[in-house]
Image 1: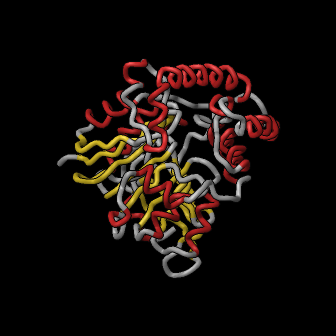
Image 2: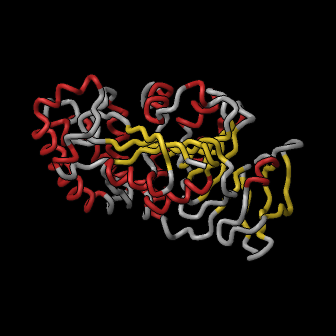
Image 3: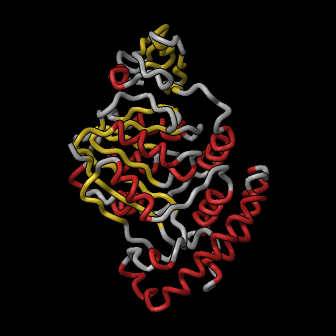
Length: 335
């Protein structure tokens, strides 16, 4: 942990100042071990292996912690062209990142953290799970990286400090996605950019037919009602499966996902699975990611847009998606 990040932090419980106690350094600026103590409520947060552990309730999202720790500590590959995916899904131009203070809210193993760093941003990367250890490996290459293990429901940052906040595929895995959204809003300076995406759902056909599609998926408009029906059925299958899969041990569930990997290459049938990626290893990972977490919510673009509007955002942009809705929205926080 770098000394400079302390000035961004507050106690996640009572929002008071923190002080650094009994620290050891691996060089003049990097804190390897130590304790951050709240001057008000006296809560303490350990620094281990250079990572502040900024949460107190380890039981609230225990299964979420276990699921994503298992997932990202067992996967060593890429999930595609990371830079292309990142720029497309955040809807922020490449030139907009350099010199910005950025929050990666739910960094996992750091796949997008690395891209933001390569684009010239100073990044604060946070995650609840032990996958944060994988992100820590990037600190050897980038001195603009700060890493914390923390809970999105109780964030340890001062208000209005970040230029960009992004959260890609994370909020729907929390107990209260809307609350997490407004937590992130508080951290963004006026004029800053917030961009997120969450799992979509079929919803009503009236709204579904206005969802933006990628150019290569526009042909689906000819059979849009059938697409809506398939997405609706897929949601029912998902709900039934997850009643079982969220109770399985993670090694057993990983093996259970292999048949879905095979089904993910069959015409038509593949759209009832949870990944159609051409790489079978990615399909395995994405099916596990879908079936293992305790929390998984689904949203419409109308619902998520209303969050942005309530929070006072302008210039909303909605992400075009493929067969299955992915609700991605970018907005600028008004003064």
